[in-house]
Image (cartoon, rainbow over all chains, first blue to last red; front, top):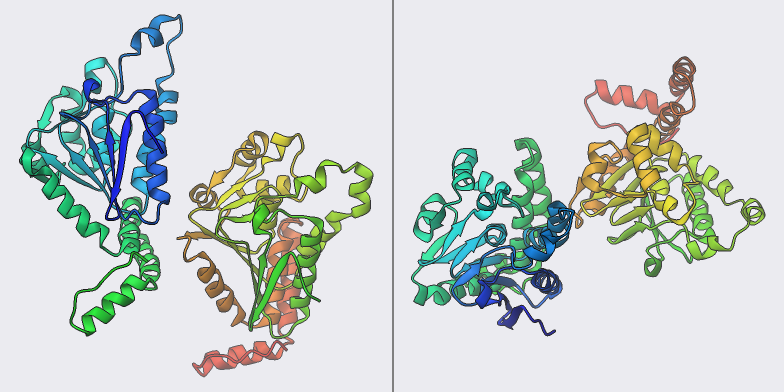
Length: 264
Length: 257
């Protein structure tokens, strides 16, 4: 499928979606929103995709919502419903990244601002270039965090530090983000691909079903008390215990060799 | 008698009925309902079966009535076909039915789910009464059972907007007993049916009857009904066995007598 605003490449069971409007710092216009959504859906359905990388072309990861259409949007009498815009454009993207049962890596090559930061935060693992940064740009235009930013930041940092970033709108550099736990790993720009590809290859050769179930459990347990969380783990362990990959791992262990996971 | 719209299996002491029109999301046509009633009545007569699991598939329990079959119907057709007589029989099933519900449970599918005695839902289940969107309303108990289960205001919203609710909402509002991952809902339902099947069959039957009576009667009358069923159980061999096993600290051997 040909896209205008994104690139989708696949090799070795790794699909890479690149936001590709470098001149506009990969800000998301409505077309990119639609194409991104479609590409995510395809990658989720594709059984041959066992790991997904999300990144940006050029020097930015994504500057977030495209503001070039502001004049038209605010030209008339009535204000547009921002809530409906989010529900239609961003919520499907964020929910799909969170719920697809395969690992999703954000390759943060440069600035991730506003809803661009939300997309990075929605991913399972974040690997950033030293030159990258995360910015809660919303307050600068008199708005609140959206597309999940408030949720992900509060879970990751607690309300105090989340609000500092949200209220000041300052850019958190990659190293600071790593210290805070907002990104998992930082690499020099020149080595970013090597680091990301290593992690992706490892995940793409992993027990995909168990990786997906792990994500399901982690998504869900924060809503539960300990008793419920234990039960939820047990239910999902029952499922994982029936996968071919689990049986393969047991066999490999007994035969003292490395397991070879098929993803089933 | 072979069935064409449902699959029936027995794994004594439980019976399993699967709605089996996957191409049309298990839409309920007349024939399917007729077979369902026949299968449930057969299980009621079969001493080896003590509980039933009723299920569809992962994508759909049932998306509701067969619209094709309904769209041309006149009131006279509906009266003559007397489809609701089948629903009345469904309600009279004596042995417990555990619903294993995943995917769509809409319209008649939601009403059929509410005919179960216990509902185990998958995380992907959706419950709704969308009839209003095609210019009709629930006709197989939806307005009554949903209201009595989740309350007037929530039922009214579902029935007047046609908007379905997720499994999580259904659980929160007491429409399902619990939700489990989609890979596990059927096994979970079977496990529960198996647990029920270990109990004394006559007691199970009379207890189910008494619980359902609560929907039809004022409290005083319901209590009288309960008491009569309670007394009745003291004439069973299983009651003696149950109490004896309890004092002897061993598992009871129930015979359904």
